[in-house]
Image 1 (spheres, rainbow, N blue to C red):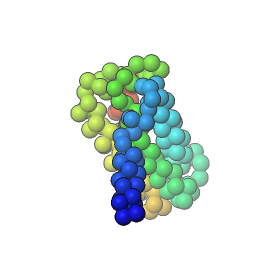
Image 2 (image 1 turned 135 degrees about the horizontal axis):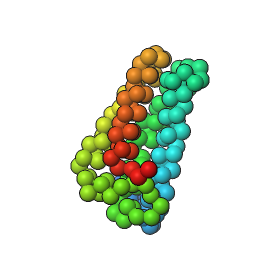
Image 3 (image 1 turned 90 degrees about the vertical axis):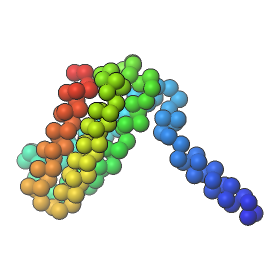
Image 4 (image 1 turned 120 degrees about the horizontal axis):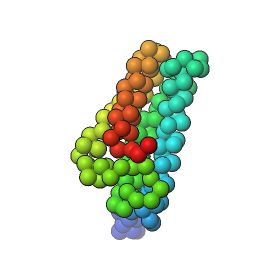
Length: 150
């Protein structure tokens, strides 16, 4: 029994820590995953944006909940850009794979701004949300301009 518990724990940790790319059976599965993650993230970002832009009344709790989801989702799609995912039903430009360091820098900046948006939304201050929302939007646009086909 003393041997089985640590062995079971080691197996569980190993299986849970496997890279996400290993979870994709085919490159097109990774593309579907990243597209789904972006869709969910955009939906929650849009809800914050509607408040930041005055299209709907500001609700601090709704803003904070959605901004927190944007922050969480900002960590997900990147595993879906593995080898072979540059083909098929994708708008990703080849520069993602040829300019990995520059692309990763943009991803990191986006994640940092998403974290700031979540923190701003938790304050309940609409002006702080507007400022942080704009910064996240700029990082989205910069990446789309450089790495996404229209």
